Length: 328
Image (cartoon, rainbow, N blue to C red; front, side, top):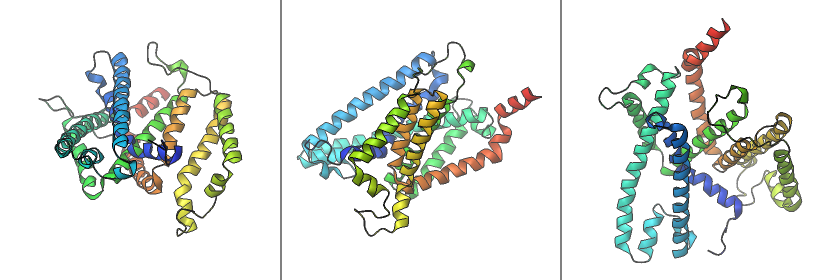
């Protein structure tokens, strides 16, 4: 375990970006609201408890793995099985490999349960065709949405490697969390229904601008070499890259830095709450560690979604119809 962080804090956060998909199962819990007796109480508890349990287990497993072999040897497809094979416990290695296959099936079932219900809710709101809200007469599940989910996931997965799939999953989920945190900032507190769940309000008017300014000053004063490298068109680790490729790699971080400045200004002017600001910036920062190629894939996927929205969803949205009726 020495050194504890061989690649520094930046290396840790880049690793977090890459494995974030392992934690997003908690989001699937929120899609089962209709099946809960008391969703306002049960869903937050279920999500928080599942996160705590998974986090503790992941930390313990990581400590055991890195304690048994050097972390540099774990750059394999099945590190858990590899470690036990490395210490001549082949029967445990085989058992873990078999268990991994079973676990992969259970993970697939979790997403097959969550995504169809999201599409079913969108269909009920008019954002997708009515077929997506079709419920099976016997099993009472969104049958059509489940089949489409399986096809949409399975077909691209045939032509992409595991890293590409997991990174695309991570960046898409992180962006969804960014939108949720950003949306909370603009919710009018007067429109909140009595008894509904409320995000605790902590005024970030001075906290966010102060820490943003302090962070920039600290980096410029104590890490000037990192600043000069960041604004340089030459990558010292890969000098063969031309200026275009170097700048392209840094675009996500440029966007993040601009976002922090804009949010700091708006938080000071609008008295935004601190908690959603922290959530937004944390998720956005993790997105910057996934590389420009994943950003390009994500933006292409986002563009397809916007085309579907403006071509179909906007005109058929029930919320849009309600607004038009109120205007009349």
